[in-house]
Amino acid sequence: MNERNLRDLLYQEFARVGKSLSSPKRLEILDILSQGRKSVETLAKNTEMSVANVSQHLQTLLNARLVKFTKEGNFVIYELADDVIADFLSTLHALSEKQLIQVQQIKEAFFNEHLGIEGVTLAQLVTRMEKGEVLLIDVRPTEEFEKAHIPGAVSVPIEELEEQLSSLPTDFDIVAYCRGPYCLLSAQAVKMLKAKGINAFRLKEGVLEWKNFTENK
Image 1 (tube, rainbow, N blue to C red):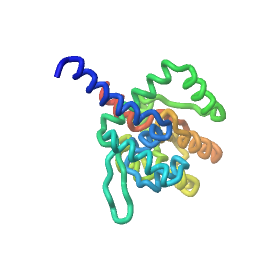
Image 2 (cartoon, rainbow, N blue to C red):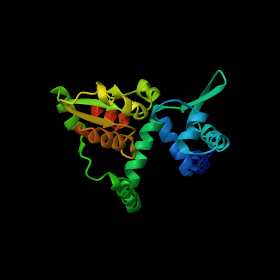
Image 3 (cartoon, helix red, strand yellow):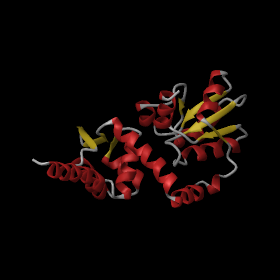
């Protein structure tokens, strides 16, 4: 095998992975799986697709070795094939936002209705948690919290927040976080908390960003 053949074969395999990422829905599925294992039915609900369509997308991702699955009773549970895929997704988001003004415009429009909600940075969060000034709540589904969460966070899924409002402290601030920069669950949570007179803030970052932040300190 000469060098040209070797290069052709290598780039053919690289393109195989790239082709599997050419669908917006498949990228969304990978983003969701970066938060934890999910059944096909849960992925269908989260992406607002039919189970049949989700299954087709998962098969493409499976062929590219980006996901793997196990069977638990009558359910097929999918997860990322390797943690490096989550790191790749974070890099893809950052690159897209830097290079494509459309991404910046969409993001601005995405959060436009939530302007006025104050945010905190990861560095500010660490300082304030160390001083015992804030309660950090994770408003993602319970199974995502159990897979990984920011140390010190309390699990309060967005669906349960309304009924748990009365049990939350009112004498210091609450910071809510969810799946990262493009997730609105934390913004919704802050609005609910503020409506009840609770001083609340949004952490735009999620668990993946927290992991990168602590590793680079």
